[in-house]
Image (cartoon, rainbow, N blue to C red; front, side, top):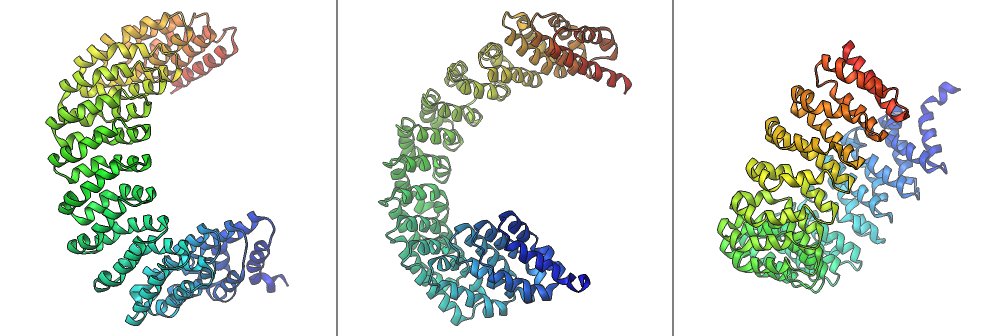
Length: 586
């Protein structure tokens, strides 16, 4: 009996698990569909499995989502592209469910299948399905249909193409805003498949309807369509049809639409070309930079450098810079932060003279901003300005502000400065670093915040790597070792950490002669935390120094620490001794 039932077993398991109350079992079953399909074979998969899935109206969105995803890669299991049409039925049902993510995944899978189907099958099965969905009584089906037109259209006959364009036009005028939104967001993909002759007439007519929609959520999606359509049209048609729409949208009564224009403006400029940008879009951009809504100003400020690259420097100075100056003192800290994140990139665009005259005062103003993120955004891009105005001018104008930030009361600001010190050091050179920033690096090792001390220790190592062991031996090592006897044990721990980081950079000779004696002395510290950190540092030094030094100096110290009254000290000392034994064996 078991032999007779064996072929039916996989489908029986699937059906049982799909009806199980446990959602995890149902999910596991769906994710094993490919295994079950292989067990059934292509013929039974088409005749039994797919019809069952079409009828399975599971009400759980997670299961339906998994099903929509699995069916998208199911063509090999139903007999290849010759039989791909059988997969349309279950996915068509999923296109009408209420949950958006399930519908989106079903549409994605249908697009993947439709792109592989034979042309005749698209005409016989795919296009009728799109028409059924577009005429669906429930709005969800109509929403899903909008994402399928670009797959159906290329294979259609002339009669069907005309019908599909008409249906899409009707969807753009649907009573439900959700349908119109979907039509607006998919218009660019559909337009890319439409012939040029119909693009100027039918598609532009649809587009104009969407741009005048009473729902701002539809209009803002039409803004995104501007850039896609602009790339398909000839430059003169783009200026005639797209440009007026962009200008109107930049003055739209809804701030969301204006926000989308501000976000998309650079792409829109590329679509219409340089000359119309200068004459028409610069005034529109200036309006957006001065918009009443902070969100719009944030989006516009974030694009200021990209926008200036399209213009010539003189026009940028005349039209855009006055707005940038206003934004640098904007009432919203987020606007100032967005501006600070891109404004440094304007220096290469405007050139040396304009940067010195117009941008430097704005940089200084933003460097002194009360909001930490604004200051950090400026610091992180200093190298772009250095390339334009040179190190001398940079040091005179901006470095005093940076030194001020290095002592900022917000520890995150101090941390950001530390992280940029090696970059500044490499840009400014040894002499400048010694004069201006050397003292600060030592001060940070005694900061009250652990994260600052830890970053300062790493900073010391990176500086030693940047300027070399000889420079470090003269400017860093003596000052670091002076602090190893600091009265505060937390600072002594930081110095031990710094020494362990410096040792690999300094090499075995300096480590043995300068660093090791002070570490050995620290093993007598009264604080157990220091003693077990000494054990950890000694363990890190074992691979660096000669074996004779390990035997004569490091091991005796570790043996002594291994008999320490404190359990943690003994633990780390024993670990270090084991490491030493392994090195000796190898």
